[in-house]
Amino acid sequence: MEEIEIRHKVAIAERLVMKLLTNLLRMLSLNYQVKIYTLKCVKMDHSI
Image 1 (cartoon, one colour):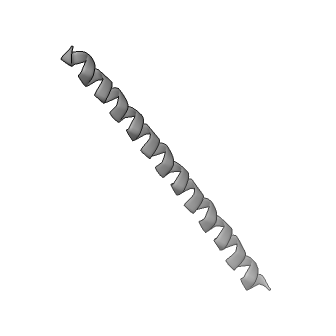
Image 2 (cartoon, rainbow, N blue to C red):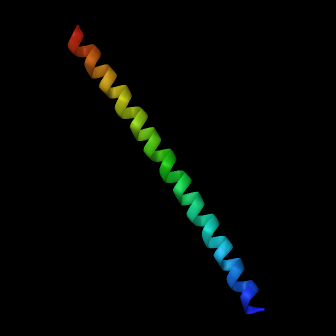
Image 3 (spheres, one colour):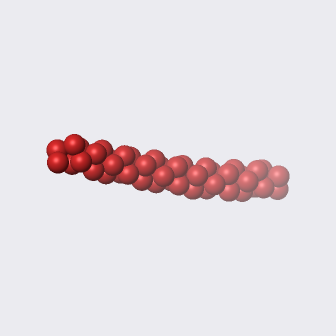
């Protein structure tokens, strides 16, 4: 009985970790895109 409970908790923990990781990756990729965008804008400003 206890073994099933532990497995259940582990499954919940794994799901939480995966959710956190995906959110983190999404935030990182967004930051990366924003940086590229700002770099492009800065380059354009210099060329004018």
